[in-house]
Amino acid sequence: MDVILLYQYTITVILLFILINFLINNILFKNTSKYKLPSSIIKDNPLISVLVPARDEEENIKKCIVSLTKQDYKNIEILVLDDNSTDNTANIIRKLSKKYSNVKFYKGEPLRKGWLGKSFACHQLSKHASGKYMIFTDADTLHFPDSISSAVACLERYRVDALSVFPMQIMVTMHERMMVPFGNYIILALFPLYLMRKVKNAMFCTAIGQFMMFKSDVYRKIGGHKSIKGKVLEDVRISKHVKKSGYKFMIFDGRSNLYCRMYKSFRDVVRGYSRVLFAAFDYNIFMMSMAIVLIAAVFLGPFIMLPLGIIFSWPALIIEVIILQVVIVLTTRIVFAIRFKCRSIDILLHPVAMFYLLFIAVKSILDIKYGDGMRWKGRVYTIDEEDELRLVSDNYK
Image (cartoon, rainbow, N blue to C red):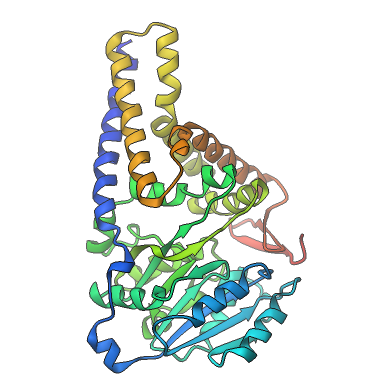
């Protein structure tokens, strides 16, 4: 029992640190809607380039573009690239470009060797951008009128060179609700946002590609998306590259300015997260396995240990420590649910969400390392001998 008690104390200490970090991060994760354009920007009225890569987005692209045309900041150009879609995406963009003078349509080139799809699409768009600032946003996002102005205000207020705004995630099905919040939750729980602001080390940096903004000269100086052309998680990679190059980067909470629904089915959820989880560890099975074990021990273990302890009549002290662990985890989930308007029942379904995560993490390894490869947006990639992704098919459906 001494070993079990020591283990429980260790997990409790880890969770207490996580709770403290979580509460601090909730303060530091600033809401973009609270910031307004400074008078200098209003006076200079610089051009802003909004760049939208789109592949098979016929369900989303019109809503996205129309929402961008309704911004309260008017001096913007909206550049949209059809990345060789197999649906009606291109025709929709063409029609909108004829209706709105600041919307420009570009036909994407075939994917080049050594590139991943989204990075290549963003790279092509950047060559047409003329603005002082570049904003890359996904085709499945919906923008409130102040999404652009508030982002510029944040960049100027905190004197950073690039930033990423995290949208409010729309979640309908249970599969979405179990997995989609995980990204924001794990950042607030484990990531030290204070160090992102104060430390130059690129390790302390993250981003989400649904909305990323750069000073255009900075984007070009770091090599743009070409600098991370063959990397999955291009958003995280380029944010780290910004810091490696000596520039400042921050993330912001855009739940009041920007909406997005990433996935709509169990298949989409599994495929989407399988694509990124293994990539987050550079396809290193050992590191990925260690992360799975640690996350399971900290975020899932208490919910398994508590009923076991009751059933097998473990000492009261151990039971009390495990209860404290459960309370800490649920406290973070309650705060998270209030901030991001998650359903109350999802707080209690936290263990189910962890099982979803562990299942998809294991599947990510099996599919990419030993299976048919990573499938995304009609393309199939496999890992080569150097543990880099290689395109093997461009017509998978």
